[in-house]
Amino acid sequence: MQRVIASFALIVLSLLLCHKGFSQGRLLGRVVDGNGAPLPAATIYLSSSSSTQAALSNSDGYYVFLAIPEGEYSLKAFKRGLPKTDPVSVTITANTTTRKDFILGPTGGSVTLLASSKPKEKPAEKPATERPVAALVKPKEEQAADKPADKPVAEAKPSGSATVAVDEDDEIKRITAEAEALTSQLNATVEKDVQIQGGIESVIKKIVYPETAIHMKIEGKVVARVFVDAKGNVLKIDILKPAHELLNEEAVRVLTEETVYIPAQAGGKPAAGAITVPLNFKIQKVTW
Image 1 (cartoon, rainbow, N blue to C red):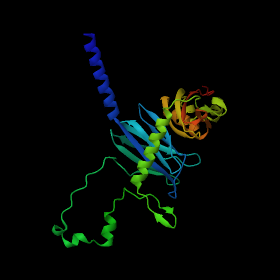
Image 2 (cartoon, one colour):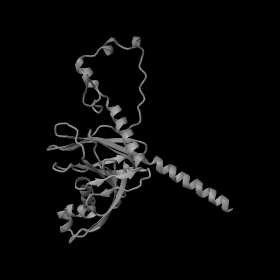
Image 3 (cartoon, helix red, strand yellow):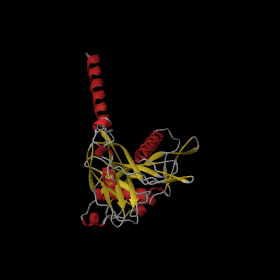
Image 4 (cartoon, rainbow, N blue to C red):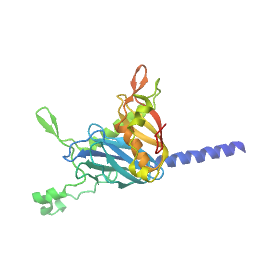
């Protein structure tokens, strides 16, 4: 009887794990400045009632969230010295990649370019003999109108003396593969964990207590897990213990913009790793 119960428990656990795996989606996008140039090291802040995390844009302006529980989220982007974007709502659906691009500048905003990563079936074309002649050759104006507005081509890149246009689908595949590779590196065993240059005290000194939180007497403890690559660059942040949204956002800001990290070590060499940082927000003094 005990074996039957144990077997049943394993089956239920397997079903729950499978359901969890299938209830996650991906979110990615690109951050550019007012002139359309890629904006690296911008912080993308994603939050809901049950999950808060952040990612940074890479040198090409791309950011990636690989595994997000499906649901409704609030999304915003910011970078020191530039105005923040207003929060936008985003729906994460299981087994689907959603894209949100941001412009950080005087006319900052966001635009959805990609709704799903699932390939669309190409409709079967009728034989040329059955198609009207007018449908075979269209005026240039109509040809331009037929091009999809939500599938732009990435900016041209020089190759020798020629200019080669890179399809954006290839760019998306590349950055997703890079994010997956970095995630697998984070799971590797390290001899020495990530450290903060100057210690946690250097982080606390850079905290700017939100004025609204002071007026409303909002206090709380934020515990963040910061993932860092082999060069000391922040890859992403998971908020393990959230507090008020104002405090969560300030914790992410200081940990991405004001903190210098010393990479982990594996085999005597710099390696990707993570560090857990607790920040206790008290109106009189921030501690850890």
